[in-house]
Length: 352
Image (cartoon, rainbow, N blue to C red; front, side):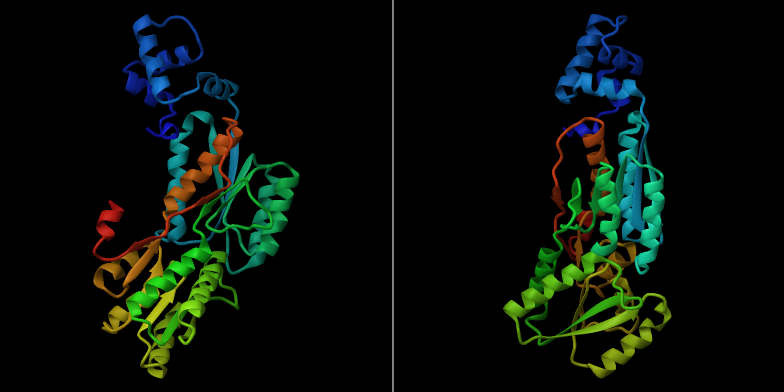
């Protein structure tokens, strides 16, 4: 049984079939509890590896913990929505300890927006910070100041090795790119041409993960299939209505390209285009279980999706701050998410 998902007093009370007040009295060593109920509660605490003194102390202080979360701006249903769902689950789990998460957002294609959001967070004097880093130059300005103030922070999705965080939750981006290249070679039967679809705004990719995945992909291809021609098509973030025309133009100019990949979470942009154009001869790979991506996977316009459990990243980031600040436990510095390969044949089992 996972201790950290069963720490609420009301859950212990339910398991021991006693009242919340009874559990509270046992934890604090107060009288007014029958011997039978006391033994029942103590047995549940033992099974859960519950440490009464530690938890009692945390509860008794009645301290409020203000965590700040800095994420890229996103629409409902996109990748970061799942991260926020995990954060919400963690808040429910640790509700007894006065945890509050204040959420801030930045335009991932505007570095100044990250800087401004960082300043606001620092001014609020947080107890801990969860952040999805932008490029190192701008991220380090925030994390260096957090470190100077001894404020713990956690990286979500991508890591900045130059300024290690208390903990990191995300995929090994470079290895994920290797994995994608290996799967692409199997899927394409070592095709001589592959296209990488990007989303770019004013030359900015908007994600460290995308860039590092692409580097890993290219490294693997160079090592194992150096004669493959890798092309790029940059789709524009702010002018999405132009995407079909850009894709029409690309495929008209390159009629023999039948394999492609996108390293961001919006593979559905190409997948929906392929479905609308009734292109069944193109193998597309992408990342993340957005609803629109999954729809394309089921209908066959995306061949493979690589998933990384974003809900788990959000939950464990909050949990780790709690472990560190409230329960004074040692935490693991690097926590790599699995690299899960999904197809229309296994997607339903995975989501369940």
